[in-house]
Length: 249
Image 1 (cartoon, helix red, strand yellow):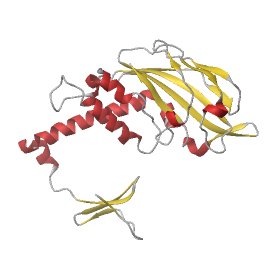
Image 2: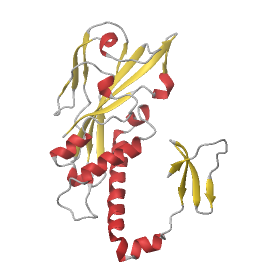
Image 3: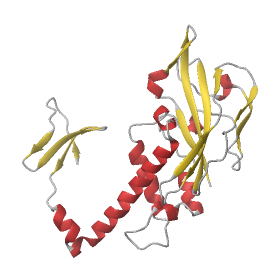
Image 4: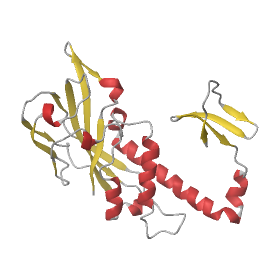
């Protein structure tokens, strides 16, 4: 795969070359020479089929998490979220020491401590990692999902984008079963504050514990706004917003 430079930008197939546009620009690659039928049936491609099956399961696990997080994902994400989640889910899948090759899955890998650590701290928007935006310690109660930020001064402990005058914070308590895809989520109150030097303790408390069995995930969302004449406007469609996985249990 190569990047296409030059004035002429084309898309489509020309002889054995395929031209296409991606998030990284205009690209070109050679046309594959092995038929799908052969890959699905030839014993020589058994490893390929196994890898493909596990790839699909890992991609589906990433989709499960995006869907479970609900509307929060649409407020803070980047263009490569799906591919970055796939990388994380693939690592977690590799930690499945029970299933045979070709059937390893995230639902087993996430039960391990290393699997949980792989997802803990994940940022849905790589342009705004939590650690580079929030400079204040917080306490998370994994039983209730409550997040407490003590003695918080927004103007000093938030890295905010130019033009921002206000911000919102909200947390989510997610229960996701990676084996079945079933999930439930509860959300906290929304804290809306000006970015100033007011010192106060902020508490985000979900409405309850989500139902079901599965992996418990705790998320926090930080959104930035500019207020003009009493109306709040999102900055660059949420380009600076944070959505982070605080913990995984």
